[in-house]
Image (cartoon, rainbow, N blue to C red; front, side, top):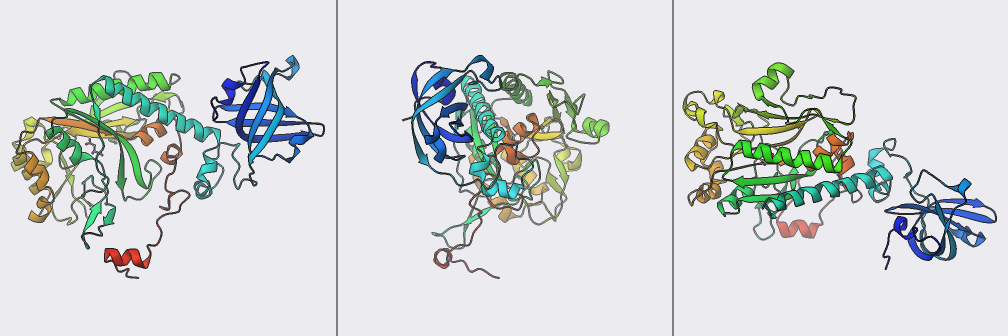
Length: 463
Ligand code: ASP
């Protein structure tokens, strides 16, 4: 087994070491051959004789060799292992590589994205993509540690489930056991996290995959994305804002020490202030929009509970009622505005909070309704039929058995990192994203189901 990464192993100047990795470059100087051997940690220069001649770029190698200090004039200051080289004593080509279909020694932006995604396993060899994966890992690790210290439990919720209305179109999965019935993939774990509060968990989080069949945009991957899903019982909106702000402030300090926050504590704007002052509910409050190291977080609160419903409100589908929830239908109305639900619902404020970073919405959440009467009233205002209400009976039933006041938030991980790293698309942060045309990376799903599979599901394809 390989026990050490290259950059650590070659610190042992004067010793014989064993190295494993890829031949990044091969330079043939006739009698001497130089190879840069790469693994996840970096590269080191190998020197050997003509016996290395059969090696080509991206071949996978085992090397036994002597770590030697380079003469002063040969030192390469640009790489961490630049003071040494490894004299090859023995080697084995563990696997040969053909010429790569895409270059991997550039930042990759110049290559057609469909081709990058087709060969994503090669695309991820490039330094920028590896670094993005490492940063993503560190951010998630930081989040887990931070929340663990504050008594949160990380809990998984189902992927095969029932529709969870977040305003997008569902992905549905046919059931074989109950022909004609369908599961939906969760647009978020919203209902489950609320049920976990009824279950007495009090503090929940999940690095949650969410599925939404929406048209792709730069700040939104097609199909699925990851969010930090979080819910707490016995809290006020203030508690959620303070916790989230502390989490992200500390995360930025630890993982992105070069970034500067425009303002701390983060400014808070009411929805109407944001609209009046910036004509946007996602204002970009950076002082210098060209500065890649500036992070302008801002909270937008006091949203109207409802927006006007449009034909495209998929949570609902009928497009007949006047109102649609601004956030989602479980968001609590402001306690001072409850009376207005009967008289002028459009004036009711919701206890919703959106987190905006450099002009991108990176998260949203709310205090939830924990009174089934109010929940039913909201269902009515958004025009739910009895059948539609029936879809959420489990929530109303659960709320009969002692539900704590609760609330939460769900910052998008891909989106947050995209904004912090000033990446051009969330896909640069997702290891295997779907292309903008909706085909998955490498495997190119969706694909056809076999006639047998369709038979078992009782499905006929209409052309
Ligand atoms: N479920 C919401 C969303 O995915 C977040 C929340 O309200 O906590 O946007």
